[in-house]
Image (cartoon, rainbow, N blue to C red):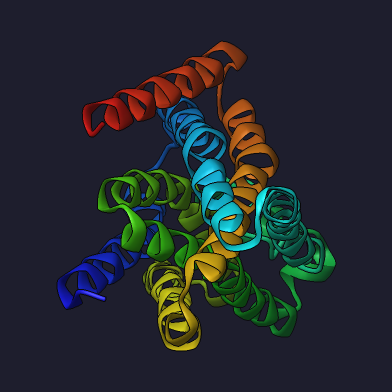
Length: 276
């Protein structure tokens, strides 16, 4: 595979992962959460992911698997890999405790509310607070690993598709950075440490890409590509429905979130049409 394409795919994955730093910076420098902007942005990201998963990625995976296994087996393999991706990211989400889960939304204002607003048993248990910070950093790393693999795989196959997915995941990572910064701040009492740790936790996305490159690339074939791509579609659909859309609703008005979804779909559709 062309070295420049691989490096480009890694670069996109790094960009998407380190976007957690934008959320961390917001938590570090800002004093209020721009809820309307986040609502539209998260809806936009969900729209991009849903459209590209159902319209582009799923059918590219299906074509590759039908070419490898024939119509019936290839179609079954596509559907199985799609729901396998959903099951994988669902299990990851299931086993992360609620507060440490970076997909449980928090706001910048929580940074200024201070430790006194935590329950008494947590506010005075600094050992528990430190563990909360560590678990939060681990949680975002675990969640971002398959997202990195998704971005990397898409960019290798179609650079334009990779750019769209990287931007969508980067938007998704902004509130995630806020969500990680809040408990780490509680754990350490330092905004700077919260920024550093949540920023660095985004490195797990390029690690996911590295895993894909080192483990899967030696065996890369139309069949492996199809199974991986169908799984990526499932992962992105789950992220959109379980995380992005509920967060968009929570941060803002219902209609703002929906306008963002439609705008994301339209932009993704137009970008795909431009490269026909």
